[in-house]
Amino acid sequence: MPVLAVTKERRAGETRVAVTPDAAKKLIALGLEVVVEAGAGLAAAATDADYEAAGARLVRAPAEAVTGADILLKVRGPTEEEIGALKAGAIVVGLLNPFQDRETMEALARHGATVFAMELVPRITRAQVMDALSSQANLAGYRAVIEAAGVYGRALPMMMTAAGTVAAAKVFVMGAGVAGLQAIATARRLGAVVTATDVRPAAKEQVESLGAKFVAVEDEEFKAAETTSGYAKPMSEAYQAKQAALVGEHIKKQDIVVTTALIPGRLAPKLVSAEHVASMKAGSVLVDLAVEQGGNVVGAKTGEIVEIGGVKIVGIPNLPGRVAADASALYARNLTAFVGLLVKDGAVAPDFEDEILQAALIARDGAITHALLKPV
Image 1: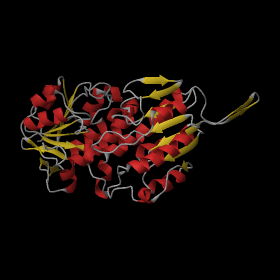
Image 2: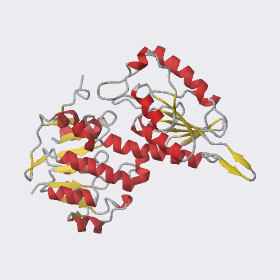
Image 3: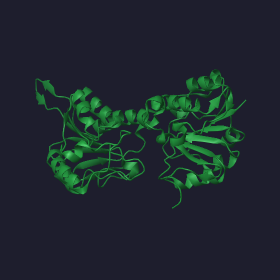
Image 4: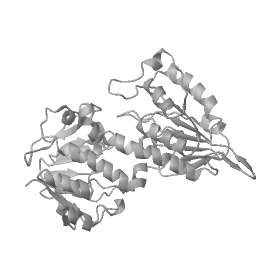
C-alpha cells in the first residue's frame, strides 16, 4: 500500500497543516496509508486523537513519517531533514514558493524527488477544486480587513448615537482578485464605504456587484490588461503613471487601504509610494498582503507594523495562518483533489501528460523541469 506522509510545518509562523483528519479519511479511501507526525495539526485545531480516529498512523519524528513515503504533502517547503529522509522518486506537493525558494527546489531535485507546486495549478475549470491560491487568498482578504480594523483607532460602520454620529470609515482595496474581492465583501459587511481598483476590466463588474465603487483609468491599455488565464498583465510605465496620479488623489481621502496585487513569478508591483503614504491623514492604516513578495507599499516590512507620519503600514505575513483551522481545511481539500491525479487503482501512477500535472511540475528525475526555473 502506498504511503502518504504529513509532517508538522516548521517554517516560521506557519500554523496550517497540509492534511486534516477529514482529508485523511478521503486519502485512505483512495488506497493510501496516511502517516502523520504527532502534533502536526495542533495549531490548526486538529488533535492526534482526531487523526487516529480517521485511520491515520501517528509517528513521533518527521523523518520517521517521511522515510519510505511515496508522497509527502506540505503547506510550505520541506526542511533539510525531511528532504534527506525522502526516498528517490518520492512525490512532494505543497505551496512551495518556487520562484523565491530556489534553494529548496534545487535540493529536492538533487535528491531525486518529483516536485509539484500547488501555486502553479492552472486556472481551468477541471482544476478549480485544486486552486489553493484562491482558497487561501479568500481567507487572506477576509483577515486583512479584520487586522486593519484592529489597528485602526476608530469604528468602521456609521453609528448614530445620542452623543452624535460616527462617520463610516473609507476603505480602498487595491487589486480585485480573490483576496481583494473578499476584502471588499468583508469591509462592506462591517459597514465601511468601499472603493476598489484593478487593472483587469472584468474586475469592474465584480467590484460593483459587491456594492463598492470602481476606481481606474479606463483607457485602451486597461481594456487589454488581462491574460487568458485570468491574471493581470504588467502595465506600461505610461499607464502606471496615469493610474498612480488617480490613486494619489483618491488615497488621500481614505482611512484604510488594503493592497493585494501579485504577479506570478515576479516581485509584487509597487502601488503605494512614499508620497502616497505621506499624503494620508494620521490614523490611517495600510495592510500590504503582498509584503512577502516584496510588497505593494513602499516602507512595508514583513512581520512589522511600521508607522510613518501617523500612518500605520501593516506587513503581517501568512494571513491565512491566522485562521489556521479553516485555511487548513480548505487547503487539505485542494491537496486531496490533486492527489487524485497521482493515484490510480491504489497505486501511485501520475500521468505526466495531464495538463494540470504538467503545469505544476517543478522537478523530476533529478532535474528542475519547469521552464521558468531552469538554469539559463
